[in-house]
Length: 260
Length: 274
View 1 (cartoon, rainbow over the protein chains, first blue to last red):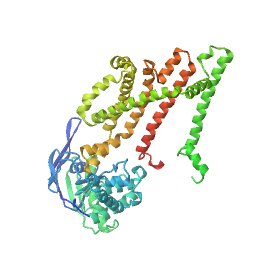
View 2: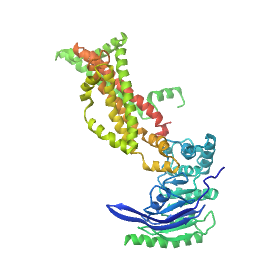
View 3: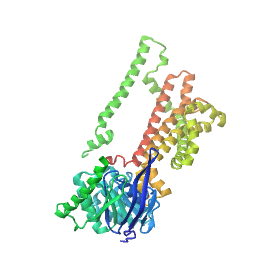
View 4: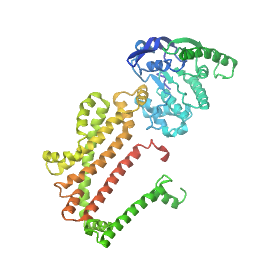
């Protein structure tokens, strides 16, 4: 298996972003600088409206920064591209393609030979446990299954980094925990650079190598936690709870600020 | 679906279990309509309300249709009408698709084409028929050109709308997987827009049958419209009604054909049936 995409370092350099709201320029991100190591799973955490999704969309190339720049593997981001895979909260599968065809979408675009595509698809469908559902259409899948397909689709394209925008946000609590465990297991195999946006502290502590806590509007980096817990993580370990408590206190400050 | 009887039942009813009752209702409605029609025409004869020639009963119409069918006359007319609709609708739909896809995708093309379409669209196509005759003559070409013109609008408008309405998240997802320009269009925009485009084509087919009749009133020697007009000249009410019914059936079949094609292409919308 070639690993052409490997995993790359991401440098966010002095990124500002402001939106025009009713003719007034409103800042969403203020001077965000951040380095994400190759192969690291980094969680962007903060209350809604803190600009964490905006930052992700800038790294994905969906939005241009007002100032500053983003480098992925040393190359500046100018638009969306296959070296940056994206997993959306709303799954965004191609509804007219079967599960297997969705996963194959990227490799086929790359012009990989059919046999290679099939091999890649089979491998990633197995990784997310959907081999038996390969010929179903998205409309026949549950939310959790759809998100598995979306993750397989992103990974099958062998990107250098994967961007996940609250991917488990629309799932019920039980499915959500199962998906976190799956992602953690997959990451131990794939070692991708993953930027994971969430507002769930538990999710961040469970998944992340580092958690970036952001301030609320405008978004800035408030603090970065390195989670030094062995994998697979135990949600009931005292150290886990300790991280949760510390981060909760920080996030609460930000939520309070919004309500003042 | 274990027994032959079940299979036959399934074949008659179609896949959905509730359609058995629906079919009975539909058949019942048609029969009730025929019964009312018979009753009305029968009463006209019995009570001597007016000359019964004005309201021929369904059996007379059916008899006329059978007679025309058996002596072969009907098929020439059906073929003429169907041929014109098929060629006209296909040409109109293809033109509309080509221009609509371009206009939906590229803003300059949209800005160029849309104002013209917006000016022409509110004009009832029938108002343009005499112009077509003046421009292209009274023959086959003007009839086909006229259907082409009428079909163009619904297909063009739905196509432009469908392309513009494609979920931007789908485009983002595809771009992040490496799709650009041509392939983004072919692999994402086109399939995402297809359901709405097919609705536009169904509208186009319906409009095609709508306008063909009137263009066959003028300067045609064949076609169901001609048959109706001929019936009017010679006071053959059963022939007029018969031709109208055949037109209705053809329009129904045309719609069903597009739906059938659509169901094949849009299997993903309701995949549980497959």
